[in-house]
Length: 344
Image (cartoon, rainbow, N blue to C red; front, side):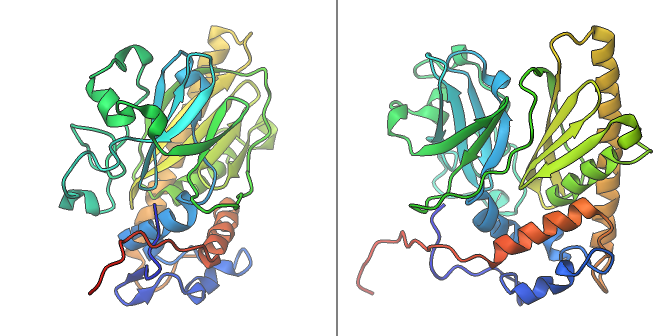
């Protein structure tokens, strides 16, 4: 996570740090384009996002009920930073970087450098796909999970800053001393409980996925809109919250490739919700997710095939997100040099 002063983000001669590259994306809605095509297809841009967003911002990684019991552990890879959050015996939470940041490999394998999260049979590291929650009873001394995530002395692992808001967990891995990024969180009704969760992975870049979910919640095709008491908000960078009359859906977006994103979905509702109401809300929200996934995949294909010019940005949610993202790209950060000094 340390940044070398000479880091550049150039893809086929195009400097992705040049803010003029995004000028058409910053025009008013109706005239603005999407981000440049490389923002949805380039492994170099994915590394730029890691530097400018995932290493800097507060990122939603899951929900408190997922790790309800002592020693339960939630793995989550933020960009290329392999971290976890664990519930302690007294109920408190602690965030740490994983013991095995690169799976214990002597060198990072070639397949792990493509921008696509690999399915690793050994561990969940900064280049592989995450596994689901690890329950506390399996984290016994000398177990593989103990060695991969916690090591012999977890207290010596580099810590991660945590915040909670309602039932949601946010993490921040920014190494810059004295810098506190603004914390964007949704309004929350404290009476809601988590009813269920699931993961889906449509074929679209995570940025397109966020806009598609918001737009689907507002569309009549998905049964949404003001008349049906459906609303949605996108909390930068990776949390989308959809509200229906009887339930709330949270979608935690996690890039797994340039053209794929894992949607970690949680369904919340009031404690008194009946089984039939629960099932009706779940079905409505899953229908919305299906439509959003289909629309996001279509948008991904449209951008990939548009070689001559950038595509017009039709989504208000997407346009607003693009303004925030370009603002992040334009920011300057402290650079760290972590190579040892030596004579040439």
